[in-house]
Length: 188
Image (cartoon, rainbow, N blue to C red; front, side, top):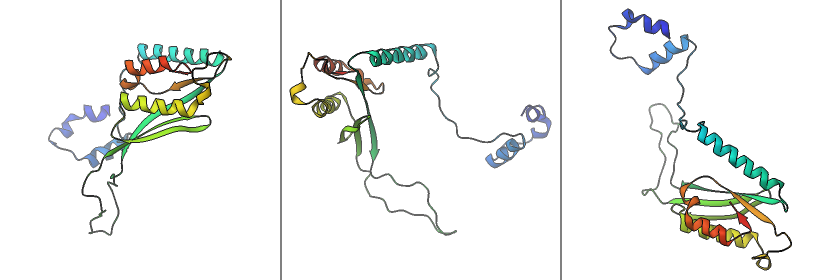
C-alpha cells in the first residue's frame, strides 16, 4: 500500500477510480474489500471492563448461595411481517420481482423468558415494549413461575429466580425497581 501512495507520479492525472479497480489493486497486495463492522469505542474501555467484572462477581456470589438461584434469560425482539427479500434471481434480461403487500404493516415485538427448562413465558405485542408492557410481562412471568400457594412465602428457603437481561433503559426504570422490590422471589 505504501508503494502505491509513494508512486504518486503515475496516479497524478487520475481523478476517479472505480471500485472494481481499487479491489483489483488491493488484491495484488493481499488486501480485500470487506464489510465494515461498527464496534462501539467504549466496549473495551476501563469502565465497561469494571462493570463486567462486577457482574461476574455478582453471578458467582449468587451461584454460591443457598438455596440455589435459578437463572431466567429475558429479551425482546421486534420484527415486521411484511419484510421481503431485497435480491432475487431471474432470466437475464428479465427483472426479478416479488409480490408484497401495499401497506408496510405493523411492527410486532416478542418478549420471551427462558431457563434451562425451556420457554417460561412469551408475549407478542404490536409495537415496542416499554416500562408498562414490561410490568405486564413480569406479572405474567411471576404467575407462570411461582404457584399461588408459594407467593409471598418467607420461610423454608423459597427458590429465588434471577432475571438476566440486556441494559435497555426501561429495564432500569423506577417502576421496574419497585416491581422487583415487591416480588422478593425474583431478583435482577
